[in-house]
Amino acid sequence: MATWQCVKQCGACCHLDPIDRPDLDHYLTPAELEQYLSLVGKDGWCIHFNAETRQCNIYFDRPRFCRVETEVFKDLYDIEPEELNDFAIDCCRQQIEGVYGDRSLELLRFDRAVGI
Image (cartoon, rainbow, N blue to C red):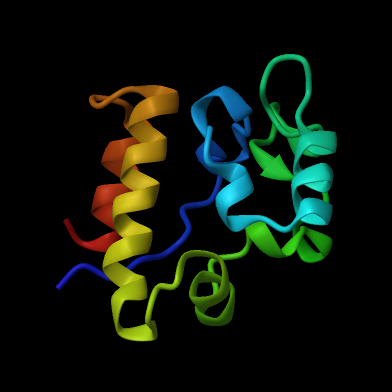
């Protein structure tokens, strides 16, 4: 069984371009949406993403919507705890494919890490 985990130095989730996420206002509060949009750089990447190290510069203080946690996913997406693992894997795969491609090293690393 595949088990979700974050793969270090991927960063696909830090590509925040709102064009790729037209439904942000459906699950973020107005304050969260404003915060989200304030994090998007001109290139579509989070302003706190360090492209050189491929890590978040504010990881421990990152916003709620950047966290893969049971309570967050229940509140934002109405995902039940028992559905979180599969949902998170699908979301990450989709995001990684969109950012890096379906034959990327990042996707191969993710699949290997989660057990696909």
